Length: 616
View 1 (cartoon, helix red, strand yellow):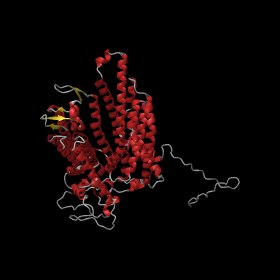
View 2 (spheres, rainbow, N blue to C red):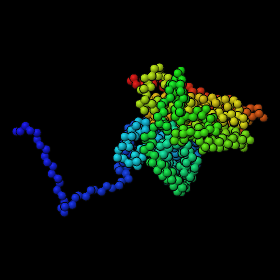
View 3 (spheres, helix red, strand yellow):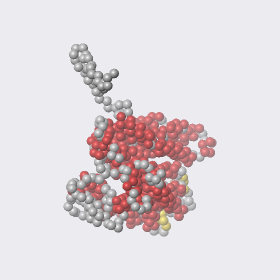
């Protein structure tokens, strides 16, 4: 046996086919979808299924709430004695009307939930890749832009559709009472599914331009309000309301609704696919257009950020000077004519900050036009062409929603985003107690509510001057806004300390406030009843307990005015006005106190939870 190493066997080339021709390469067929659409889509669906245990709990809770709402509607709409002693035909008609009203309420609430949840899940898909820097690795693979787009977007749409399908068994229970045809259910579900696709594509297109997750979600909400709510031919509520009259009318409206949504989907698809690579590789803060500039030293002013004083808190300074925030000084300075610089371009500032503070000609003209329109509306309100009481209840409620969302969404993405970017460990190594970091995040989120708070104050002052509300009502409404703002910041910080990433924290925050506003309103609608007082005409009113837990109902009840001719506080205008007593506003006064107390408890729980961060 030889000690020399064995020699490698010489490879023999395969024999040529008969005729001396080389074998033909197999044809590669173009397939739009593979087994899962593409490999990335299958992986994203699998990963989302493993990480969404809270979503399964949310689906179960959604089904339970819908079942409870159906029972509340049934119990509040009918008298049991009348049902047992009535004729069969009459009882059947009542049950049919109940089933129709519940089905309509179900699909309207479901469409609203779709428009609220889809931006959260879809926007998080792109920002997750950007903040974890895994998008760079994803784009080095052999996947095309179309496959990446369909994979990331399709997996998030599956999550939303699972929430939509969670209420289907409860809806089928209405078949026991009749009055709801299967064709109506199919038309409404088809309209809702199309709305999911349209909202997802719009969110993906906007996320390519947004700097932060919160900014992408808020901009998407604004665009969906224009496209899917105010622009009625493209609104899912259009075929749903028509199908409630007859399923054939709803199917006919799909002829208008589907092409409108198709145009939105195509435009959003081409924009989103074109900017997908930039969206995943884009940094949170854009680089300076002038290279070679060193960062500012402490005590010196930079190109964008104010100087950091020696005695200032660096954590709070960091939160108060995040990119995209427009301070009060910048907003007032934007109305003065000044020469524009390179820092005032859209590419440098972002869309919202560019419209609010850029010194270029275009945004400056838009701000002056908005100011003139606002002055014109104020004149109409002061001349009683627009009821001031109506402005206080409706525009004030919109400003309140803006305030709560601006504060809460910023707080919900504070700690969770630092954890997701793996910068939380560096912040925990700073000297000082850990609650200072939570305090800085909470104050930074409250600072985000500066402009919504100014909007709320302007509405209250103008409506008080126009005698739409009294001075006492304006003070109570301001206290209500402050209490809800503190609760929004506290629950946002608590969710941010508990959730692993910003997407889970944001979706949980939206789910909580959607339940507090929409869920309690449905219960209030189910339990509405007549109120008959001596010397007053009968009227319908919600139960007192609903005004203690629903912020919008509490806001509407506290918007009362003083009738100088009768010498008493009244609610409403004209013949529909009725005197307000302390018993009418006491539950509404309890609402801000209740939420402020809950906010304090959540703050203590957040501090206790954050003390264990990284130590267990």
